[in-house]
Length: 303
Image (cartoon, rainbow, N blue to C red; front, side, top):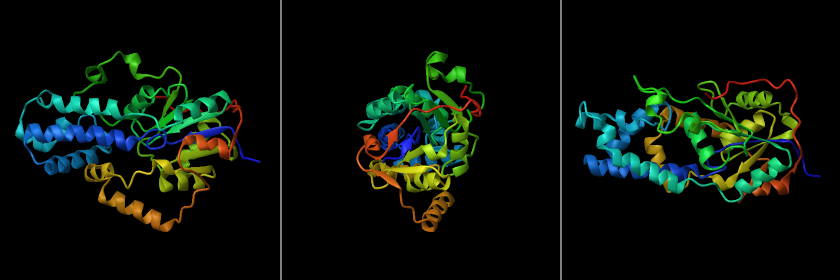
């Protein structure tokens, strides 16, 4: 008999949608316009971008252009968002063009919901970007919960009201409950996965965790006592966009070395593997209705 499952916790980036393609297209488009308009070498902009990303702890920093040292030196005391408005526009257009779900994802999640299964999204992406993508991709309601880190700090003197371009309600979910993880609690921490299960009332023996990373998803699930499912179709390290990501990433050399050592320490073998699509879950498991215990612990919601 297939294992019976009542709750699925799934990674988002490169598991439900092609985050690397979207980010590579958007960041690459912005970078090309910045280099063309500023007449600065692209490698100089990339090096400054990596410094800002490392300081802010994310490769999706919304105020990158304003904080790039090379541009601030070139245009002292000027509004960089006005000078390089075309670069911002190029980023947004490329993001809109390239943000799409992997095949079968929407249909698979809809069937899981129809069968009464609890569906939880768990991502290391910051709250704003994770929320934007969930809404844009039509996942609001297909995910019962979304867990993400809080947003990065705003630049001094900036406020949410000042930077938002849409009504406040456009930034919130209608159905999905968005819960924030403590700052600094990122994958592959099995205690975070255990806390998520406790928070939603999911039983580990009836829960699966799906993700594209052997270290951050598969090993974490195994250490948390949860059935792991490896989304092999989401592997990204061999792709061209990954090289750009490495050059501008918020990962420090110490972070990269620490991840290399973790992989060397653990010979990770997934229990289950999805080779082509998320829909392969139905070949592996029997999904049944989730019954929430009355005492599921409440977690902070996204404001």
